[in-house]
Image (cartoon, rainbow, N blue to C red):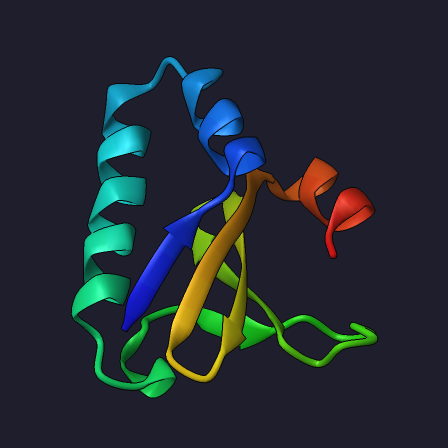
Length: 90
């Protein structure tokens, strides 16, 4: 699948000092790039109550990655801990 990373996503990654967590996020990114369909992406779930219906989240422990999927393009929008993530996404 084609991928894109937004500035807000990259900024939130820079704030994380845990290298193991950064490695997990990079592994998820590579998995998404090599996935043929959205069903090949692990821990992907649709976000309830989203007006567009294209917002999804990927779970990494207590952290979440917010993505939008339109046809063959996956856009990484937001990354953060669960307790803050759902207050601002989508």
